[in-house]
Length: 96
View 1 (tube, rainbow, N blue to C red):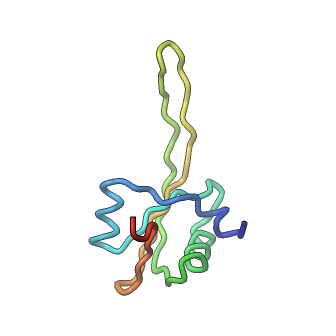
View 2: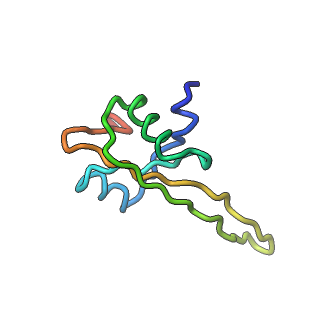
């Protein structure tokens, strides 16, 4: 497995991320917690062969969840919003 796919985990597929992709050409990805903005930028550029204009990152804190009488916590994770130029496209799934 190459280094960029250790940093980039998977795309965040939600209504908001789809709207960002369609209207503003931004891609939302779940990334490794220890990854910096520059590492994320290099990983996206090498994995998808596109130029990255800007990277915004945010930490999603863990949440308390219950299942009956059992209480647990979800894992913390990091989300990256990557801005691409107007002509660049990143397709996650082809012909589904």
